[in-house]
Image (tube, rainbow, N blue to C red; front, side, top):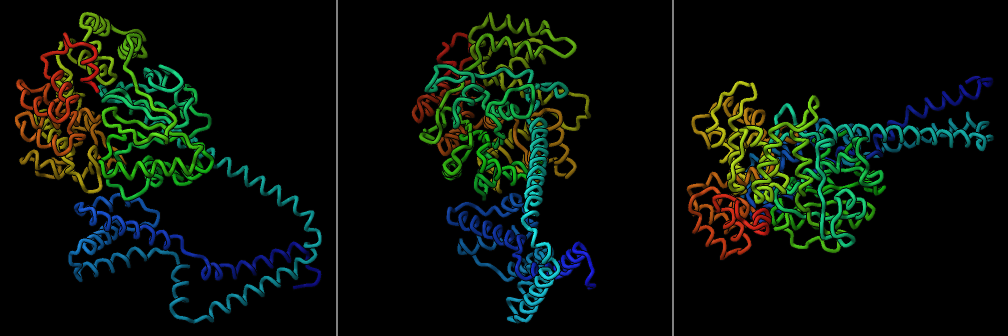
Length: 630
């Protein structure tokens, strides 16, 4: 270099020299994040296989593979399935054949093809024992450092002045990060509006319920500081809150509404600067991952960019609002370890807010000392019912309720016990839906109201070609409901959802004449698109019923002529079948033996079964109506 060369040119040339050698150092010293992630994921898969084998659960390679389909290391589901199967066989004492080893070797080779070059180069150095590459790289780095110091020695003199510019650069970088964070939050709020802004259940698909303008708020009782309180006020007042309620009391819709509070400017925030994450806890059934990872997994299915960063930042800063729905929808085995996860996470991050829901009949005081308060959701008041009906009957063109809503009000006034039944939000939805669909409502039992609503949904024609009969749809829905209630979907799923591929396989079981692939897909698509009884979630890969009560009714209907099968199921798993038994008693003409058996096993459930078995709810006292819905 020439002696008269300017300092800026010297810096540039020195930087270029240093840059030529930095990749070599990176290859040697930088660990492979992908390789580390791959090893971590494979270890988790092996641990899950060993746990399943030791617990005596059946092999569920496909389910575990599906659970890790979207992994950061881009491991194939084939590799994960093979690793799980091999480890399961080894842990359960089954032979592991040479064919399995060959498959593992082949899949591992394929998975590792895309691993970083740095990891491969480091492995070469470690295995060969040749330290010459490391020695020469160190020498080159040392020379580059000396050259840089020589040509920039004049600049080092006024380094103190340059520190100011360094501070300004840090400030600018912080502003850039904040702008990036705001973009991330803005994108997530759009996801919340898209996911929870409208509800289709028991509605015209073209006119879903707007969760901002049409939602009727709930109240909660039994809190330490007030006899009755609006739920939104309770969430603001208590950092950790448990809400219990009867089936259909609005627990799930409430959490969706709370999630929208931070996304829609028309709603006030329920927790200052808190970012809501809504997780349906039934997703944790059989899931080989802790709660923290499941939160990120849920966001990834909602197409949220930077899910891990969102959660880690929210936990560390304490500005998350965890909305955990359906503690009662966990199996007993999974419920225990999920409760441990919840307690651990909330204990580690004390500033994180949390709202948890559970059916009243299934809660066993497991969260005492973890939540700040436990409250019970109460039914709609007369004003709430009127407000709901006003929203139901109004349209943007006609903001006033129509004559059909007025007649439904008159019907409630003439039949106070039906009005008591309508204090349950889901039952009010059903009654309004029946009235809108048939122009009439008869006095009958809760079970028969459910049956009538399902029949209407299955038979309705929304202007699309219908290839399958209502009877075919009903038989398939009954089969799938009983399959789920029996815990049949064990391949990495739970009692309330199953993979679409598995559902398609069950089509031919329920309807032997439908064996073509086009039929198995077409039947499910027609049910999803025209009835809204089944929903596609998780990117269209998983099916679930629109509400647990619909699944429980259809499971009961599938055993309408098999009371012995019903009782066997209830004895073996009362939590899963309790609601179906009550509904069954309202569907058949003579439920006497079932009521007698249930009364001996569980008197409160027996009383509810007896109430459900009446020809109508007319004449039932209000306290018995409440028992019926609990």
